[in-house]
Each structure stands twice: as C-alpha cells, then as structure tokens.
Amino acid sequence: MADGTNDTGETRSPGSPGKPDRWGPLRLRLRGRGAIGPGAHGAIDPVAREGHLEFDRILFFTDAVFAIAITLLIVDLPVQVERTRGTLNSAVQLRKALPGIYGFAISFAVIALFWLAHHSTFRYIKAIDRPLMLLNLLFLGVIAFLPFPTELLSASSSSQAPGVVFYAACAGSAGLFETLAWYYAMRAGLVEGLDEASQRLFLLRAARVPLVFGISIAIAQFDPRAATYFWLALVVSGWAVNYYYDRRTSSGATAAPVEG
Image (cartoon, rainbow, N blue to C red; front, side, top):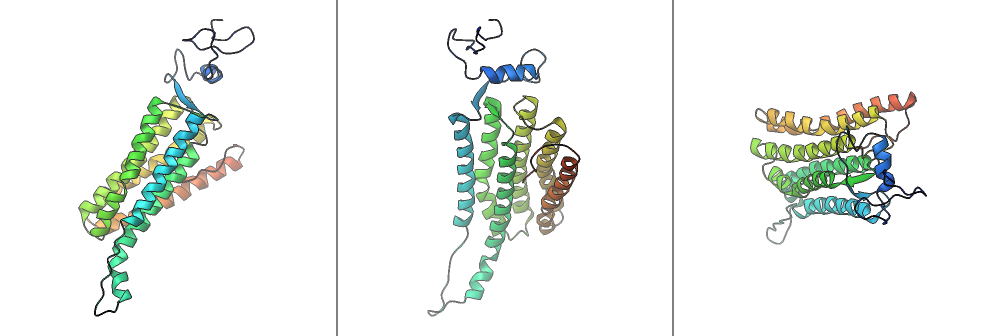
C-alpha cells in the first residue's frame, strides 16, 4: 500500500519491495507525531532502535569510554616516592600528592555527573540516527580527553589561569555536546515517555553545565582558584532543577527523576 504497509498491517521496506521493514512501526509512529515527513522538525533515519543489538552496542561503547576515562585519571596520578636513607616520610609524600588527588577528585566527580546525565537522558531516547550518533561521539571524544587537562590542572595546583581555563573549556565542551545531543533528539522526535515540559527541563539541566564552566573561565582571569570553587554551582543548580522537577511531578506529571 502507499503508506508502506501490506493488507495484513505488516510494514515493508521502501527500498526493497516485499521485504519486511523493521523500522516501519517506528517510522509510522513518528510520522503520526509529526517527527518525519512534510512539516517535521527533521527527517529521521534511525540506525539503531531500543531493544536491538545496534542500540545496545552504542550504549556499551559509551559506558566503556567512561570507564576508561575514569581509569586513566588514577593512572595519571603521580606516585613518585622518594626515600631518604632508607626511610619514607609519608607526610611529605602525601603533601606532594595532594594536587594530583585534588585534580582526580574534581574530574571523577565531573565525569560521574556526565555519566549519570547520559544514563538519564538515554532512558528516554528510543532510537538513534546518524546525526545523534555523531554528537554522541563528539561528546565521548571530549570525555576520553579529560585525563589530560586533569593532569595539567593538578600540575598547576589550580593556581594558574591557563590550566583552569583549559580544563573548564574541555569540560564545558563535553556539556555543550551533550546539550546539543538532547536538543537534537527532542527536535527529531527520538524522545518518548516525557511530555514537552519535562523535555525542556532536561534540556535546562544539560545546558547548565557549559554555562557554569563558561562563567568560570571569566572568573579564572581574576582568581583561578575561585573559578574551581565556582564549579560547585553544578551541584547547587542540579539540586535546584531537581527541586523544581519534584514539585512538578508531584503535581501530576509522570516521569522518572532527573539524574546527573
């Protein structure tokens, strides 16, 4: 038939007559919601759909990148131990390692927050097309790169503006790519299970990350250490969004809590 279905309701692949189209039900559902076809926000050509191996492979790859990035943080932690006449002054060695530990703690928290946010958003993204896959790869590329600015931040003891600015720029870029990925998924009709207001709330939560790191770059020009303390605004703003979200869901909306 003209809409891609046969008399029994089974969808057929547009390019291969007579061959079942596994994306057919998704296309028909999205077309009915205005996500594809004339007047849609963007054309969708999913390469992976929830419940299929392709979708799981993308998520497994994402988790692997996060795991490797966190592992590299501790690998890069300086462990040079100096002995004097056969004795070891643990207090001195620990004091020397404090900048590295400080950098590790910051980056572990940042990467963990990114992972929580990614996990939360992809609970509602039911299909992935090529533009979304590209945005996800750009996001993961920055995550994998974070151990380097972390080492630079540790070496400068958060007291030099270039190290703080470089770290904030990298972390802010990751947040920007994550925000763009969620915005694209919204516009392309790849999100299910959330009403429009909740989707915008997720977008606000993602957008706060590049905003906070961007403001910290300006602060670092005057006081680099104060700029690192300003990163705590990520936690405070996250609590504020969660509070608003909890009030909204308790008033009748149905969706899972926002994480990350």
